[in-house]
Image 1: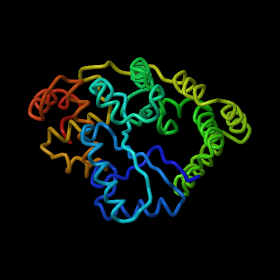
Image 2: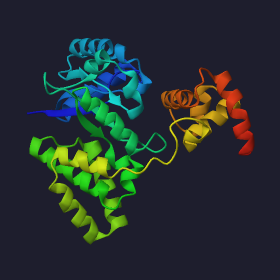
Image 3: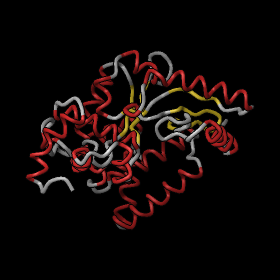
Image 4: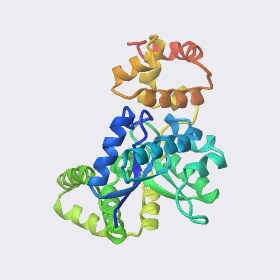
Length: 295
């Protein structure tokens, strides 16, 4: 039985996917050589038009067939907590996985500067209320989890246990990153506390691991709207908008993709109740002046 990848950036020129079709085909060939038989293409929902994902998957599927690459692909998406309110039932269903009555979605744990686990919990509750199960992406990168002693170790152990039970090993590249993360966590926590946390995690089922991640959330540290609701990264983006920089220029300054800049601006617009860059710069100027002005 071949490997199944549930989270894979393979769509060409989409979000974090390969730059072009030729590169996507080569990446697909490498996946097949590694033993992968099926991947779910999961661009970040906030950085693409979700309605276009099925068509992009069909185009790539036809290209794979034409090139003789025996890799099955399916359409999906990685959701952030902030994507959920804007997605209607048709959009969610178009990127959901699993059989009727057991559909599930990939929901990303908040990365630095993108929200809290409390906000993740709200989104998770809404998706469950709409009838979907959840797979939480990248819990080890969530600051609230990292700040809780032993939390990441328990979740990594639970994930390893689940992969073993499903005969679903990590691919070699991700295995190396996983092993490096485990070594770093062991060094930070110490051998005995690490082993204890790891043993605790290995006893968790997937549902218990998700429940544990939700219990480990931090308190909301800022209001939901207004200038005070902005994260430090969002303030940096706003400052550069006020300086007149374009999205590609902001990305170059802050070492992030244009899609990430776009996502931050979308969050900023919603939090501040503005519709465009001109309104944003006008509203932000007095706040930036109080903090020392645009830099």
